[in-house]
Every structure is written in structure tokens, then in C-alpha cells.
Length: 411
Image 1 (tube, rainbow, N blue to C red):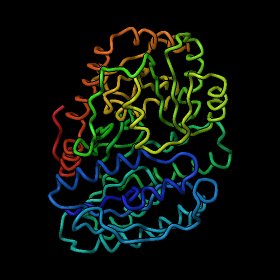
Image 2: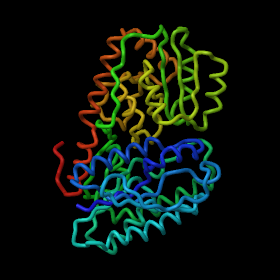
Image 3: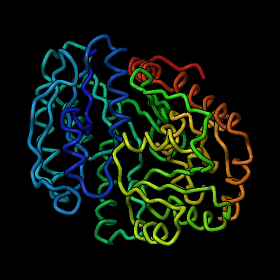
Image 4: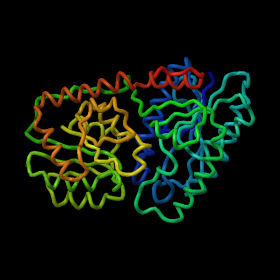
């Protein structure tokens, strides 16, 4: 079928430039997930899909160096016809600009060869994207719109310091999105609870909590030969308080074993607290915001990866932390809380924390490091095998195509 992917990926030839111009958090996880889906769809569909793209970057001047992002034509693979849609990169204005420019381009695609089976796959509940897709469907009612929901609008920004103005804009945005959702034909959710939050009705939907591209993975066998007696715990991700980073620091204060170290990568509202603690504790190393390649390298070097996000808050029902999949791919054992958005099948391959206090985190870390190196390596290898064999981009892309074609999944 003729598939148009409407998203915000970083073209490969621009990736490093986008990283260098970004300030603060970069949407590494969203970029990787989109690319994995695109490459899976290319294979399962039999020929390249079309990408209509407006890159996911922060607004000028606080989060990105450029005030204007130019349009360009490019190809993500041979015979692909892709387009980046430019926009004025100012908060609020860029959303309107995106919606107008994307609508112009998507109309051309909608009327071209109208007799073909056409599908728009939208990545994220992004108002300009949904608006443009609906405009295309009004021109060509035979278009199938499939919406992938990695986040719900009310849970996309969990910082403590959001202004009243921003909260008001988010409320208005949710009302607009709810109106346009009536034209969506199918949905892809990260957790099953999302379907309860959105008025899906009888429309088909599936859960895809994550995707890995096994062909591009640089799988490294973790060595059981230790370079020294150091045991490293690593956290990579956003440093927002709601994600438990401060509780992790409190827990580490309770660990007296001098051979256990804590490495932290990322940026966010808790960054100053992390920097201060790293300056007074020689066993804590803060790397700052690093590239994804650097984060992956550190994940292979560490002995234990941790996600200190606990189950408090309704948002945990609607979230599958992207770092869980990334952690498991590394082959390094991973420690997490049990979260409602993580399917039960994952817990055979993850260490879990029982209890919500820093003492509980510290105790569990010490218990894990009582296992032998060989036992930890085996545990991490099983997690790696699970995600590569069960959550690879070919399997997940075929599920998306089956969803669009109306084929029911066998539960």
C-alpha cells in the first residue's frame, strides 16, 4: 500500500548537526523509535514508505539555535520520496506554521493516484500532524489514518515548574485533539490503559510498547573479566524529579560499599542537584547530556542499569519508559519498579524494587551485587535475547500493517 509516515525524525545526514544546535533535552528515544518503525515498514510493505517530516526540536532561542528550520527534499533509502517541512521555530507559532505547511504537502500526496490504498501513520498526538491528516482524508475519504500514541496530551510534560500559561495551552490543545480524533481509523498505544483514556469505541487498536532494530544493533558480549573491583550503576535519561532521580541520589548516600559507583547522564529540572551531589561524592560521576551513542557505550560498560521511576501518579499507567527497552538491549542487568504500563512478560528479565523508600532502592542494589559476575551476565543476556526476538522492528511493523488491513491479532 501507499504509506505516508507523518513524524519528526532526524534525517541521518542532519543528526549530528541537530544534536549540536539543541540545548537541554534531545528527543533521542522518539527519534530511535520512529526510525525503527520506518525501517520495519519499508521491509514489510515491500517498497519504501514516504516520510513527511517536521523535526522534533525545541523552540528558539531557549532550546535550539535556529529561529527558522528550512524545508528540504531527501530520501531515507533508495527510491524513497521524503520531505522535511520547514517552520518558524518560535513557541506557539511553530505549531500553526507546521500545520499549514504540512497540510499543503499532504494534499498533494492525497490526490496522487487516488485509486491506490493509502494510509497515513501519524507519530504522536501532535495537533498539526493530526489536523493535516484529517484535511487529507476529507480530500480522499479512502485514506486510512493510523495514530501512534507514545504519550497522552495530559502527560507529555511532567516538570514541576510548568507555568499557568503553558498548562492553559495544553488544555486547549487537548480539546482540539479530542475533536479531530473522530477521524482516526486505528490506534497504536504504548500501554493498554491508553485505550481507556481515549474514546476508541469499536475502532481497532494494538499495543506496541517498543521496537528494536536487530539488524543495526551492535551486540557486544559483555566480558566477565573485570578491569577492577569497581561496580557501576548507571542512569541515562531525563533528570525530572517525577522520574525518581532525587530518590536515587538519596539511596546512593546509604550505600557504604566503596566499590559501588553511580554514573548519571541526562538533563532536566533536577540537574543542579545532581551536579552538586557529584561534586561532593567522588563515587558519583555526572556526564551531562550525552549523545545516544555515548549513552549506549556507557550502558555496555556498566554493571547495573537503573530506572528509579516508581508507580506513583496516574501517568505511569500510560507510559512504557523507553529506556527499559534500550537498557535490555545492552545485555546489562536492569533494576526498575513494577509499573502498570510495563507488561508482565518483561518481569522475567528485570530486577525489581519492592517498596518506595530510598532504603528499599539501596538494599536491592546491594542484594543484586551479591550475585556472581557470571549470574549477572546470564541474566542480562536473557533480557537482550527477549527484546531482539520478540520486539524487533519486522514483527512490530507487520503488526501495524495487519492492523491497517483489518486483520485481528491472536491474543
